[in-house]
Image 1 (cartoon, rainbow, N blue to C red):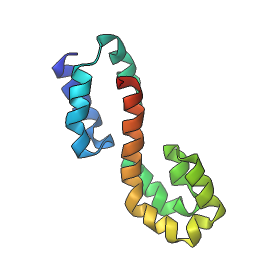
Image 2 (image 1 turned 90 degrees about the vertical axis):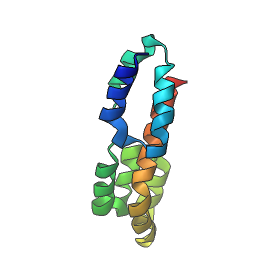
Image 3 (image 1 turned 30 degrees about the horizontal axis):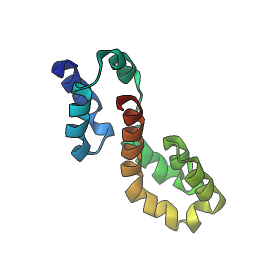
Image 4 (image 1 turned 30 degrees about the vertical axis):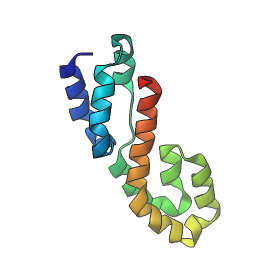
Length: 112
């Protein structure tokens, strides 16, 4: 894979991943077969900042977890009103990291 294309991908999508994962992502993309590049470019990642905003506004109902694909946790938060508010507050601190992990999992499906 062309290093210049990979660097552009990293610059454009770096905010969707943990900073310590960026070097690993770059190395994996450089060694990737060119035939998968068009698929990688079309992937859409969840924005961690949007997840935080949704968590602040409607985290009690589990909407933040539904958005990132954690359906089970979303149902749990919905049925318990965000763990009576405690779980919702804890998620304010965890949701951005959880969103970035989901993005990494999505990317790894196509890299490996």
